[in-house]
Length: 254
Image (tube, rainbow, N blue to C red):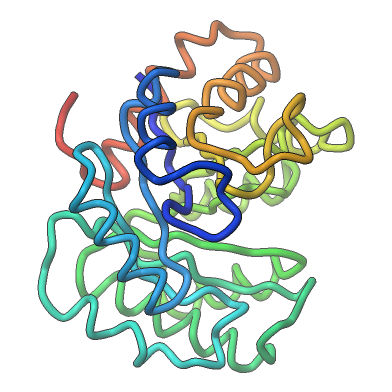
């Protein structure tokens, strides 16, 4: 069964109710979902969704777009251990949009690396147009044992740098895009045991669903594109990425 390692349920822009999205996912063979926090409100909503749905887990994080809000806004959600909260993030750097100043992004990213380490949680990284600073901050703060570069958009060079740090790479619907040759090359070299698949729903719907809200039920489309890039069977990618998700997020067994 597939695991969507990164989606946003609930979230504005989805084209179905939360219950419908979960039912569609299960019908498509997507057994587990990690719903991701981007600020205090969205993180709280993610935890609530995980409480409502078996086989769903949540993260608590402050997205670089919202870094100006300050990491203190999410710390309360991590005060007590919760088995449904499996990661800190998504957090990191986004120099494409720069909705928060770069200094605020860097500070919030560093602080959340510390939260992941201190609470023994996985770290989920968002990085866009900021590879060097992302790697520099990881080097200075210390890479958590279980770190995921979500929605991987780099090529082989960035993949090797991340893998050398012990990170997992999570591939999204971008791998199906015509212009994403470098991402497919990265997927071809990434060891299967270090690979995850995700939708990032409601964003980045894969071909041939572009232009519509994405949904967790489309994880198999992403997985098929990964399999094609690697020249292996889809079943092999399905099993390997599910096992990787179990390891990185410490999910219960099948």
